[in-house]
Image (tube, rainbow, N blue to C red; front, side, top):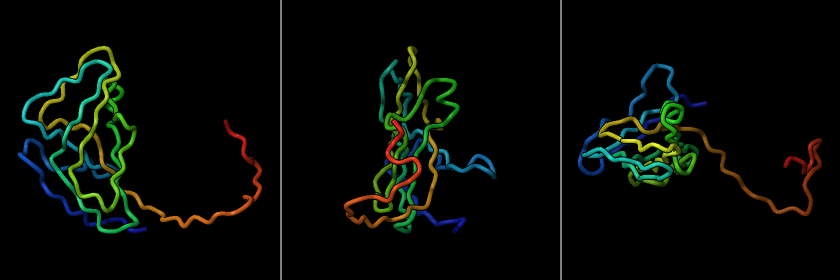
Length: 145
């Protein structure tokens, strides 16, 4: 498996945040920061769009970007991504925007430059679907829910 890829990054709009960075040598995700000029308060049980000020270009079809919540924000403040995990397709070149959801009863303040999410690049298998009349049986079968 390829261990490094070159991803183009472009700043979008006025800049109030650093470029994404790995925070340690073993980090899987690049930290995305809030590209805002002034603090934004997220009301209890509400969500808010927070721009990152960057757009990226993934170099090949078989790679995608996944935007995950930061575990520290979730554990300490109840802040998650409203959509769970954001998917950045290889052909999307618009600004990365994170919709933060406040799951607590207290307001949460996002300050300019705060680390709000993390971006991980992963391989993608492109599927070819074949319509069949029957699927092969398995030990589990269709049980599950």
